[in-house]
Length: 46
Image 1 (cartoon, rainbow, N blue to C red):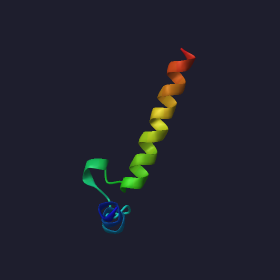
Image 2 (image 1 turned 180 degrees about the horizontal axis):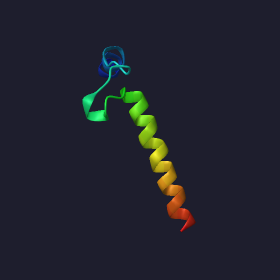
Image 3 (image 1 turned 30 degrees about the horizontal axis):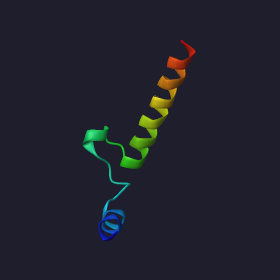
């Protein structure tokens, strides 16, 4: 529990990351999730 609290307090979800194409982690995760959802929909339609 202490570790999770530390991560939540310490980790900056707004800081941009070069590995994510300069996007903040929360935005990058949202983009990935939307892309996966689109891919899943396309796979089901085929």
